[in-house]
Image 1 (tube, rainbow, N blue to C red):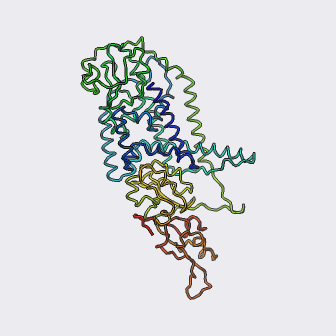
Image 2 (image 1 turned 90 degrees about the vertical axis):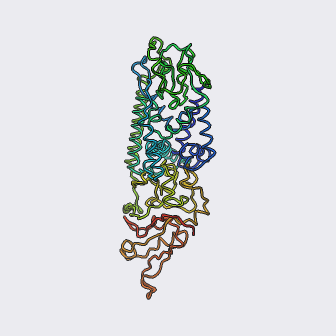
Image 3 (image 1 turned 60 degrees about the vertical axis):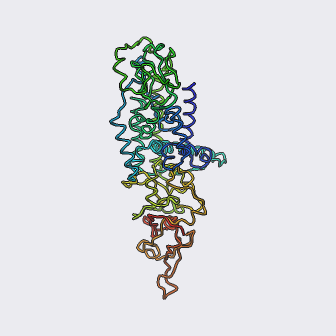
Length: 522
């Protein structure tokens, strides 16, 4: 029952977590948004004491079941590992390997130093939930949106508008490449060693390993029943079972139950470890190898029935999955939505201005607070209905969201990003609070304004400013009939970007928003 229960819960968590990133309508988050907030590291940054205590107690009682049930990146590794073909069934999936302390602990130390120093790029690269979020956004979301648009086309032909078209666009080529490389590395590591990433690189796995060593329930050997067939070691995705010495490295064991299910002799049990363990029931791998190194392997009993069906069919399935993902991603790259003005002339795309201070979302308080708390999971990027958020390419803030107004502006009535952020980088705010938060101020660029370059009357920025911070005044104060140009009241501007987005000047807007290091309330 341990393996079956773990499998059902893991399937629910991976599907629900994936839908959180794919859903662009906002319908799913009220029901499943809690899954993002029970992830270990996001809850730690958000200082969610209840969740942190619950996860620590869960690990102290049951072991590292967080890694096998709740963490979507861990479950993704299991899925990738099952796509690996097995040519020699007697050899099995895996074999025992010792703990790589010289890799685990330096990575954890580097992760903690980067967190304290506010180097968000390092945190984003190593944090497991962020890694999964980037894969879901960059590799799976284009497929999902392409399918939605296909259904929308079919529905329109039958006079139904149950679906609506969405733009498929690349948020950041840098983030896409990182996500693609992460996926490839995960796949290779999963095919070779199962949960190698979890037990060697992942900082969350290393942190939980300190607690799991002393968990109440553990997978234990019954040496009287054990026949040394090595079946348990061959299916241990954590490579932590040494059947020769009858020991389990509990710092790496994720309590998946595969070994119990594979053992034909009932030699493994998931139970409290006795106070006076017999030989081989020690939770430490080191110090247990010498006395049991002469046990021979009974290879005659090592055929495992559950390994059937891992041959050609799974190779085809894996190829189909990878080819389908590549084709859909290529389609997202190739799609270019032609923008026409009345069908007469093509409108040039806007180019982002060079802001001295990047814009951070309302609710983030300051650039420093945002940089220290954001893990770059991209959940807010996928949920932004105005296409304002996209990953940063800055050195210290790499892959953390930043704001830009080429495709839309931050509407005062929208607070979606503050509702979905699991780390506390964007604190929840109401729409009323948002209208009084100043994240930046507008700046007029005289040389780009169409009033002067094209000798026309405009005023788009003033008409669409939601706070009335922009007014049009005569260019010549002594001549009331002269061309009118915008003047900005910075004390009223909240930095929403409506003026920048709706400015007709191309490719650079004649008015843009400069960010504030510290947000202010007006």
